[in-house]
Length: 554
Ligand code: C2E
Ligand code: CA
Ligand code: CA
Picture 1 (cartoon, rainbow, N blue to C red):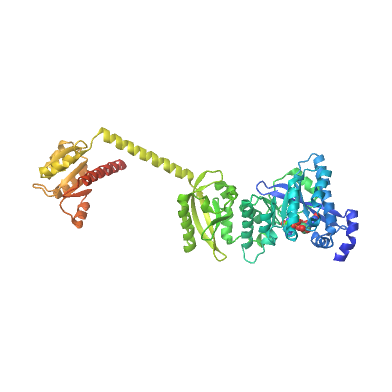
Picture 2 (cartoon, helix red, strand yellow):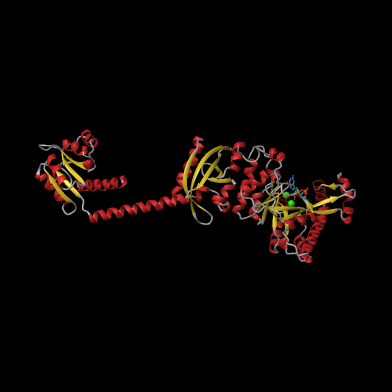
């Protein structure tokens, strides 16, 4: 129909009832159930053919007829909702379109209020879709009108959000209740993946502001899954349902069937590569891997969550998107920020895999231990990097480890305590100098059982006399009859004596000699002239470590 034909026939068409209401359902992405609909006008010509709104709406907006048509549509919708209520149906909200031209009417709010009052319709069932372009024309008046309508209980939806203009300014000034983003504005950008990245940002931003998002123009399962994966709540589009006559919509709402539309293969292929920056293999993995997967964007400072797969929901919940911040670092425990940051830094620098463990907060306030493996995807723009993360909740494992460690430590302390009480340790001093023995004995009297021997041969006799129950030997090297080295050699050859630790007392302070001593199985050495505190400490250390070794060996 040409413009002039449209203009010539519009008034008759309105009187004749050629304009009819179609409704396109909106779906809740988490339940896959219809959750209301949008009223879209159709022009049915007397010959039965349809005129497309894309043709006549712009004409009516130019010549002002749109205000008449809209008023008609709104009233028709009120009549429909009234009938549903009267028939006792469960009624979900229906949204109507408010043209930018309607907003020039200073009585717009009054008109809508009167209309819903006339049909006694709760305003929450009658949602209003406004385009942001309208706001540019007349910001002050529009924000007033919107406020007034919200006070009356109307839900305000921002139609075609992000299609241009100053979306951010709009959000700053006006409290809209719902954002509608149109896939068609975003998926055909020049850089592959850019559109998706913009959608993800819009959804994310909306989350921060606590505004629900409806994505419209959703044509494929792939798009629906993608939207769900970035935290979008509602969807509207041919994939779920086309705009339909009211009767058909009623039937649909009666059935309340969960939609699981079969894949539309052709359409799937069409946007195969446009839906995210992943290559097809990764894309496939993303959806099918039975593990929690996320895509992060890292700009050298913040780690932002862009997308999750289905399993992520089970591990960390979709509520990940409900944090007011989307910087993973700020959800991470202070003690692990450094590790997490380094892992992301490393993967950007090397583009090799990286991994790390960190403790992070969940929205329910709980802390979860996460093990993550990172893979580099690609560069986004000049400074941003897309990174693929495989996440595992290892909290249970970590807790078990900790319990086990606690238990082990407690058992060890307990045992050490008991040993200390029940059996005093026996320390043998082997030195030919009586004075040398006396000085050392003096250090340990009351603390350990002290045995004495004046050379190697004597030492074997004393060990036998005490049924080999010697916990530590302090050994002088230079002695008559059997010197220290010979004693060591023989002692280490006897099974039952080999593991009695030995501390050598030596005047030798050359490093290579000391190393040689350690090599022939000496636990430690004390250099003469000795410092009392050091001797005490070394003896104590060797006793503790040898009792640990014994226990571990059992
Ligand atoms: P809109 O408000 O953005 O409505 C959504 C449009 O996208 C509808 O086109 C709908 O049929 C179409 N659509 C829905 N799902 C898909 C999809 O998956 N793929 C594609 N390609 N399109 C999809 P429709 O009904 O032709 O309306 C076009 C526009 O005309 C509307 O865009 C709206 O701006 C305007 N319009 C329609 N009815 C009214 C009305 O009663 N009053 C006013 N003022 N404007 C209306
Ligand atoms: Ca709309
Ligand atoms: Ca729209």
